[in-house]
Length: 76
Image (cartoon, rainbow, N blue to C red; front, side, top):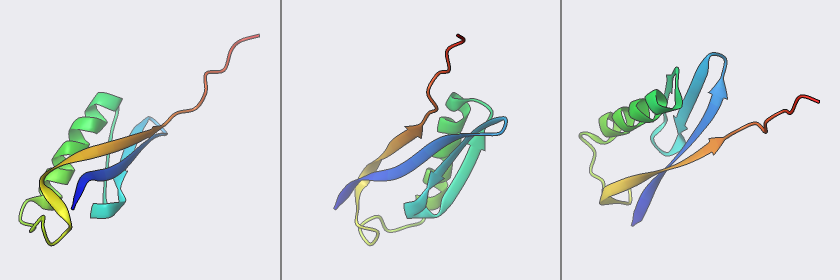
């Protein structure tokens, strides 16, 4: 049984996008905090009427997020 649901967050024009391939869900937000809140909501909705055991998940899975960041560019 898996304890984690994988998600990827990356910067997009004007904000952030969060994808959860395991659940076929995508959400976005203007800020990273807003995107994380939206990700929790979309995962909860996707799992709302699902049998977690059939999906191979424990009863209260954690969302494991990978955040893709670009390196800082230093003025020089």
